[in-house]
Image 1 (cartoon, rainbow, N blue to C red):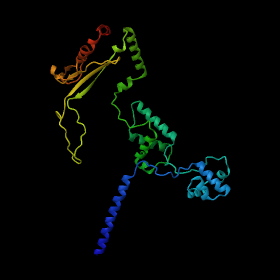
Image 2 (image 1 turned 90 degrees about the horizontal axis):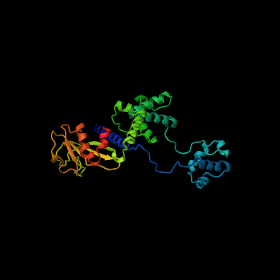
Image 3 (image 1 turned 30 degrees about the horizontal axis):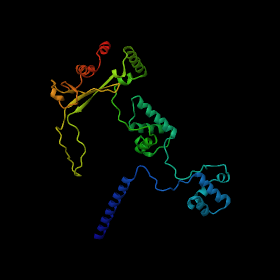
Image 4 (image 1 turned 45 degrees about the vertical axis):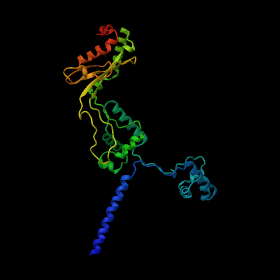
Amino acid sequence: MLVCWLFCWVLGCLLIIGTLFVSEIVLKMPRYHKRKSNRGLVSPALMLGAAREVKTYGKSIRSVAKAFGINYRTLTRYCQKFTAEEISNETVSPPTTKIGYQKNRQVFTDEQEQELEKYILNASSIYFGLTPKEIRKLAFELAISNNLKVPKSWESNKLAGPDWFTSFLTRHPSLSIRTPESTSLARATSFNQHNVKTFFDNLESVITRYGIQPHDIWNMDETGETTVQKPSKVVARKGFKQVGAITSAERGTLVTLAAAVSGGGNSVPPFFVFPRVHFKDHFIRDGPIGCKGGSNPSGWMTEELFFWTITALICPLKDLTLLMKMA
């Protein structure tokens, strides 16, 4: 009884160890195979020439294999694979018999994948890009509609596998997974050839009418800056979850910064919008030289502050006559 119990215990331990060993091997299997030898790289024409030396001229397989730099067992196998027409007909080159390792069977042909790539790019250009899961589902439906042979996992899940999707992106480097920006329908529909042409026609008319030069055109943009910056990475104890860095506060205050650059390459000091009801001069005490500031309870740029930014920073640099005419 004791011997049977020990036998069962040892057998159970061996099964557990074997399961862990196999799972570890599966987890370490690479997704992409990297060639470690030069086997299977003999050109078809070279292999056919060696087979003709053996079949036509009656030379030994070992001597021909040594002369051509081919393994003699490989040459023996292909001497049996080549047809009599390929051996006797000198004009047949390269042979129709497949030589070396063959790539994995693809579900789609190159032309079908190019059509699928074209469809994906077209959908992305009209602001209706497809997610990876939608592309996998589309690939499955395309294979079924063309009566192509698909793996069983495709049929059970009703979509292509993740490995196929990864390989598809590798074969088509023009595609990549991107995070789209939120674009309203009004912006998407307004950005068309007619509206863009109308805009540049009006811009050309204004520039010609008032004689505007590149240094007269200013581009201003605003961005949000917080008073508490994100700490940089530091080296700390391994396995210790809480790693901190001293800052002025855990949550900072958002301050709007407006910067302007002209077409001639000139720039003006920035303009700050603080989330306060009343602006104080000491808010920009240590700011850039010549900077200006304003306040708004929300901390955002408003129409009044935008006009103030122009009059305080840009207008002192040039004559107001042009602005008065355009207004």
